[in-house]
Length: 383
Image (cartoon, rainbow, N blue to C red; front, side, top):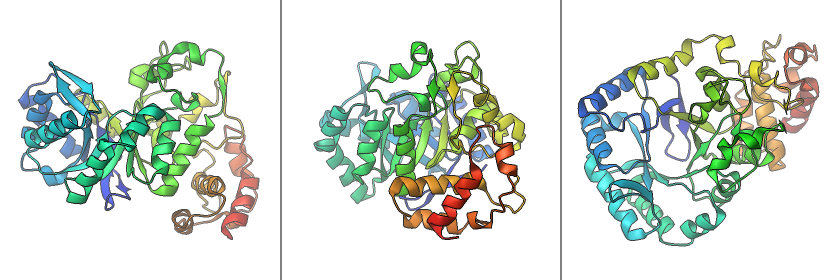
């Protein structure tokens, strides 16, 4: 297992592969314990808990008893339980009761990330940020009851606006190769609608690209939901592209996006956890999402660096994908932010070392003009 830092959360380190809670729901207390034992064994230390189901909270609390310090918990604020079902609420009294219930049932006095639940519309964001909800979250953070403020969303317009306030430390966002081609929407169901993919797209939606770059610049960590599109990406029949991906290609795609720290996977069994963590021993070919993207007729990525790493190996050792990533971040900012400058500095080889041999361009499945990008990076960073 590999880990990444949540930079605005005291550099908490979270596993790149994490767990969503849906795979636990409906299981016995013994099964919860067994699944968490397996997660710890595999090095998984991060879990999202969107559900307010009391049975989940009770069973999960029992499963982590005595091991609270070994796990990073992402608990949702505004996720309530009413009349035997989970509901999203903006009522501050209901929100407080639900959050306090979460702490009690989990047997903890703090949550690492207090995630404001499901904000897809700008009007909803305005309500959250202009009222009692954000005040409650900031108060919890000041008291140490939560270590960071998060927000979950599927809409890049809403997410960008939230990140720009400076109030959000972690963003839970839906990321996969299909969704990244969709324009913004306040209706999450649009992301699943096959009709919206019928005529194809050219490159990623610019607002999603802007969001990822903004998060990277502001050190707002992204933890990914919907990496497999609810399973659709793994099926030739249901994939919006009409071509199936495997689990490792989906993980690799997400983990190569700027600002992504972790991918929340809805594993329903120990076997599924073991399969996903097999990502670290999988071959390059098994992880290669470009082999799918580059051959699709209706979806063109020509000229756009997808950070897939196919440009490697560089004869002088330049990590071309990382250089391009930092270059894009700098261009988006209109300058070189300190964090981007430092990340670039730490690369073992830099754009100025490029010998223009063209090996990377011959390898690139998306016909990126890499040599020109290396020249631009040298100009921007100075070496």
